[in-house]
Length: 391
Ligand SMILES: Nc1ncnc2c1ncn2[C@@H]1O[C@H](COP(=O)(O)OP(=O)(O)OP(=O)(O)O)[C@@H](O)[C@H]1O
Ligand SMILES: [Mg+2]
Image (cartoon, rainbow, N blue to C red; front, side, top):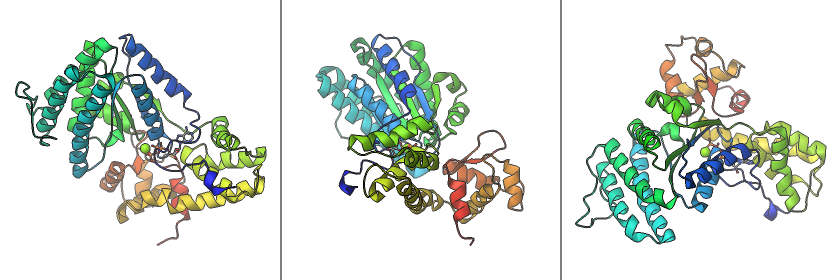
């Protein structure tokens, strides 16, 4: 088919040609926004799931909806490591100022929002970041107590006090939320807690790896009750088929049923894989409808692309020792083996390898689905590792 018109988009957070299988989460969020307009506040969603399952895409969809509905929206992506902490804090401060400015222009309420912008600048000072721009109006003392909990609370209270009478709300959307530095996370959870109690329209909305709910609960015990937790999983076979067929039909093409079935099966319903296989079959098939042979070839080509991009981008981030751990995990042949079993395959004990296990968890390569068990965060990673030539 004509390469130029290929609708499929394997990538990170790229809007897919058809966003399938997420009606439940989108519907729940639309309800939250609709209720917020009536000053009837619910819990915000936390979306967690494996790599490439479509969390960022879904989060972006929610941001756009909230934005269209008149919310003040701010979106950031957390990052691990100390350098990441500073960068993320700087980004948060910057986005706060930019978001407030955009909001005030859109709704033509500069007089109400300008003092909040000063306050937001004070907040970045308090974070030790220095002012985004040098000047503060003289009568506005910035909230720079330096105590991140207090400053954040003051800021959110002031912002929501302006938004509430306008039936609007403040949504702070955080991707890769498991990587947020624990001081900032703890301040945000405390503010969310306070906001719910006082009916301030403030919503933390997060997306991240499957360990995110545990990270939140580990930070503040009440986090378990603060959010609506939603696991973002692979698409059902019907939704996966739609994710492939709808974009192709839109361009006047189609699949034979058996060709479609082969791709759905090979993808396991994982959105990233669907985009990769969809892209491959479009490029391979000489004409429509796409045939079984086209699909079989597309799986081969798509898998090669995954082996050259999706998997190595994770694998290459691992140290030699972490790779040995991942290889042992793959060698168990189980989805969620006991950590002890992995350690045994490395000729060690669970305690002996706990440091490497923890560092791989911090890098988001693996996670602990339950106490004493371990699993990959990347679907298909075990097969990829088993395909690697032994070193
Ligand atoms: N519901 C869906 N239907 C079809 N394709 C989707 C869907 N959701 C996401 N995709 C596609 O899947 C790919 C991965 O999506 P996304 O980057 O949102 O995943 P992610 O869960 O954030 O991954 P990571 O954990 O690596 O950040 C993108 O190419 C996106 O276009
Ligand atoms: Mg993502």
